[in-house]
Length: 402
Ligand SMILES: O=C(O)[C@@H](O)[C@@H](O)[C@H](O)[C@H](O)CO
Ligand SMILES: [Mg+2]
Figure 1 (cartoon, rainbow, N blue to C red):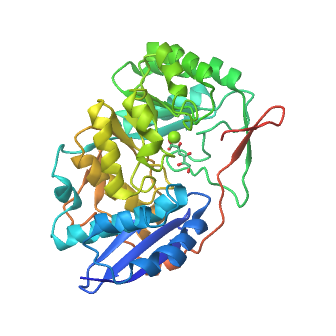
Figure 2: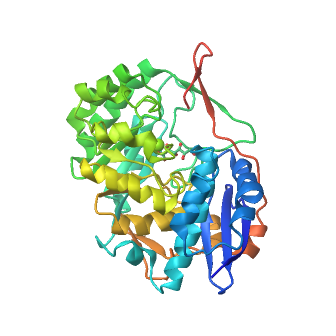
């Protein structure tokens, strides 16, 4: 069996997506996602100029060897561009493998470990009152787990507060928009949100919060401690994780569960965090961390330390990644939760998929492969539009982490 062609399809049905379609001499094809938010074209070039020429003619069934070829063989390892390109190839090959086996992907991974996948949605508002209402709307839709982000008085466009409610998109401008940040103001305000949420809705739902890399380790420890009475499911990306050791300090001070990993590319980004039990949930996902072949290694390492998965699932991860992640989640023994930020109806139309939401859970169907396709004709109607994530500056102009 041979790979006969591989094509990159760029489409913007409301936001940009980069998709790889691999075709074979047996008529079976596979689809992979290679979207890197705000840096899409770098991956397009990496795939078209440096990956596709190498894989034409290879046997698509050897997905492990092709993964190693692209990872070791490039000499230059890791990084978001490389690993997204590898992920796209890997997912397309697993899609082909599952189609050849006439099975839904989760069967090939080891079968069903659960009936459905618990997801969390994004509730946000300009202030505490609005956010409390937004969480109520998610509870009414049946969600069991909800991430709550609030605007902070005196901070311009604090992270996580979108202009839309059910659908919002942080990559919102042709050049990065400028947002603000003030840690002291956030530290005073955010715990009050969770106090109000527990007072209003009780303790039956899981609540989550994303610090989006904004706090120092000491400030992160303060936030974790302040949130303890409200029993969060997790506190995410509370400090940047390039320095994995930084989490030791946070861990010594708070029992609020910690989640990290949406920007991780490989197991090496998470190794110390996992082996020292510095986190509770690992957020690496299919498109970010080299596809199924690599993500399952991360999940297996995490399982040794009772760390569970919590795959990233923002809108910049296409339905191809969402569908694949749901097969992964349906199988992976140490599953925790799946993020589910809804795509717009236009995106859902371009990517026909076999998964559905019911009462706070997502369910994958039994379509063979990962169950997500791309309607190329429709995709062609939505040309690429430059779109960047915002940047953040402190009040005195200092560049901060968005
Ligand atoms: O937890 C999350 O979903 C966020 O941190 C993301 O929305 C993130 O900001 C985007 O994926 C960036 O592209
Ligand atoms: Mg996040």
